[in-house]
Image (cartoon, rainbow, N blue to C red; front, side):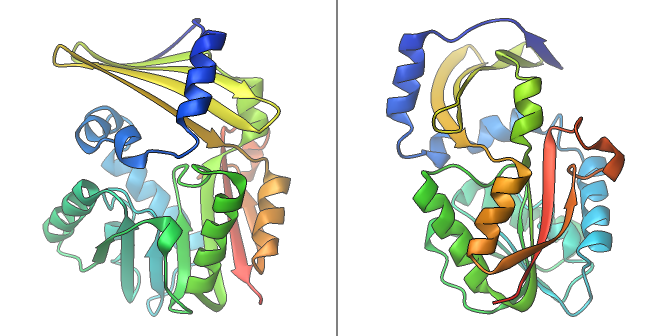
Length: 268
């Protein structure tokens, strides 16, 4: 169950969050066991399958394509895409997610190459027809590093290759920003207190996880972009936008959807 309630994060807590997220601690923020416990309520097989159906149609995905999913998380898109493409490579910094993805690939009887690695250190050159960055997997770092991540993804693509990025639509989020979001499961709670900093375009979050009678607090932030800004960043890396969608849904949802999905083609 997910609830939206009114609560606030103090100025002192915000400053603590800002100081502590100069380097985004991905491993701490996305601790595998807690992530799988709470997010599995939202990331169901039905939703993941619907996402992949959309990608196959709109990118589109061809049987000869080689796909890079970065970061791939626990492989919920990669393993399903493996049924439609020649090969799929998933990269994620969390070895725990990689282990889950490999086991799920065996369960689904598909073949995927999974690599434990950091998106900031990608070293592929012209190997892929398609690259994916899904479910708000972009914007963890400072502006320069975020741009370098896009640069490495573009470098991994063949000329004419397609890049699909799906993330938060900043403009819509700010119209509906919730100070506090509570997720509850079986008496355990994940509580996010949020505040947006207009000067640097980042949303700062203080996350409290109360689970199995233990308490864990994490501070993190994500750089948010609107569609125009994100398209400009892609263009700097030779990626020309060819399609835009309000997430994995129809065009009539513009202005309402908290999600943003862009498909771009490598022209340089």
